Amino acid sequence: MPSLDVVIVSYQCRALVERCLASLERHPFTRGEQRVHLVENASTDGTAALVAERFPHVRLHVLSENAGFSAANNVVLRDADGDQVLLLNPDTEVTPGALDALSARLDADPGIGMLGCRLVQDDGTFDHAAKRSFPTPLSALAHFTGVGRRAGAGTRLGQYRATELGEHECGDVDAVNGAFMLVRRTALQEVGLLDEGYWLYMEDLDWCYRFHQAGWRVRYEGDVTIVHVKGGTSGRHRRLRQNVAFHRGMARFYRKFHAGRNPLLDAAVYGGIAAKLAIAVTRSTTARALAAPAGRPS
Image (cartoon, rainbow, N blue to C red):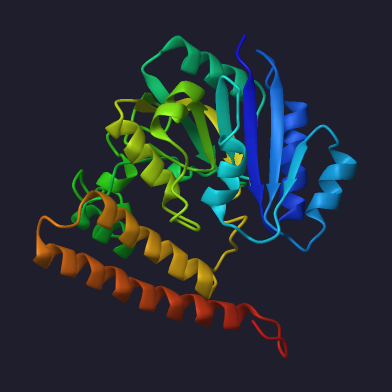
């Protein structure tokens, strides 16, 4: 029977970690051995102490600094020896039978390197980032301006959301969400670790792209659902470092896989990313200021 290494990376989200680990206790992987790892990114909210006391079976890895998502996951991925490895966000809760069902499907098809599933938010609404297509300049522009997210946007404008596959359907996709990525270890060994050039954001898209490059399929299973508290770990409004990381990630992804073919297009893409960063920083700063209690800094 397969063994499963579950890898959770946390930073300043103690309550979410407790919910996530409790859900793994209630609905564990039962097809084989389950090993849960918590990589703690130097939080100051008592997460490490909570895990050590409340969940002594969890393998705790405490880092001396906030190394980011990729580097923290790689702490475990580098030496993981489970037949399957699950990257799981701390702002998720697994549901009854989900891990067993998805593990069995990964086992059944040797061509699949990675599986994702349907993600719903706390209120039950679908998280459209659960399945994605690799962005083109047009689809990325449509998505971030909101045009591609409207009903009836059409295939080209709505392409980033993998609209050809329904929310509850199952099928191959370009990418799944980093909140839940179930990976075959033999595929991981061939593709390699997460790219630590991404501090936060876009590393999941990069990894999926590299899986495809190596000939492994990525599949979305829409009939299996877990809960994803959207933005639970990064906050409702990104701070400056997060905003910069997100847009640097966009530029890195484009530079790695697409740049160099058309200098004019490259300049337009990088200029668009810079303009989007300026808008995002302004909006986030304003939103945090409006949300902050009177007399307290945001």
